[in-house]
Length: 497
Image: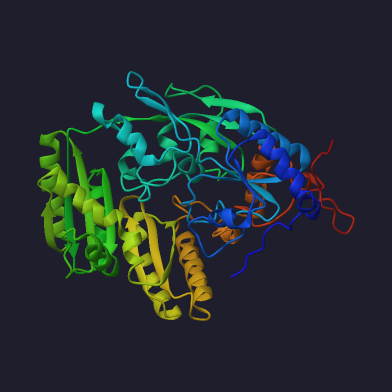
């Protein structure tokens, strides 16, 4: 499987030895990795279908080192690919042969826990789960919880605007990050936002969160922490039809009930997760909803009754309510282990990520079934039902000729379907290289050019993570050109200065 990436700069490659030596002077000790064997773990992120060894790997430990590395690369016209924990599923951290891969894994300290302001100041290499663990003793937690939270870093969460099973009620990363320290490609260090819940001026954090490493390198993050709810209980509801489960989701939200989390799995995913975790999932259903309700005990008891009644009205065949914290955790354990569980039933799979309006869920699932038959490939569906974020897992065998290409085409059709149903190409995994060439299906050329102008305002030379997100590989200088065709300017009636 091939994908078009920026051409390598041979003049940079010819200077590799000198570049490595210069970088060792900036990041001494074990901070620079240059041998082919030692760089193998960095040749891809979690989208392992695409691989490319980097020119060199640099692992700085301080903001000053990051600044000096970026300025050196800026002054010498060298591309840089930032990398967190490497759990990205969209190829966002895929290296380039002529680029420095800048890993933030050594930024793993929590710098401050401020319970008075309900924030944590952390370095980007700290894992998502570690933040919650650091504040659990005081009854707090960090709300966004991707399935990979045990491994994914908070810096990577910012790059992709990650969500998780509880983002329906408590928001994505963008709703829980208040500030950051950002190093630009020029080496300039900016401090954006802070502990205050609101900041004056432009919403720069809103721009940086989800920017996929194209604008700068985050070296410090200030996140919001929340009080753990007094009570949290989960319902595990089975349905004989997937469409009935989708209807239940719509009716729960329509009734004004916002669960802490609402997840759905179809039969293949249920069976894989149950065999892996033994969570007690019913195996005779076509769809399973896990609905978590939190708040005061009285409120949760009342909401459980209402959700049970709604589910029964939609034709639920089973309903089990957690009776303890351990049982609630077990319900979620199966869902959060669904991705590795499916890995046991298929040699390979591609995890897709698209978002649709909740009401379009039955149509989307019907279309996925049709595509599964068309391509002759199995699929297991796991998704955040409450906010319409689909995660179809396309099952294939890379050792069989042509199956990888079929899986990729299958995934592209799913994403096109999401857009056609009024949704978007990505919910939380990012665009990276996986969805890059589908961007024109959602955005016009004017839209994409405007987005790239924002990129150019931060990185005019296009040295940060090139080849990602934007389908047309061109330079910032080309965006301002006026195209003249047949001797005529576009919009000749407009005054020009």
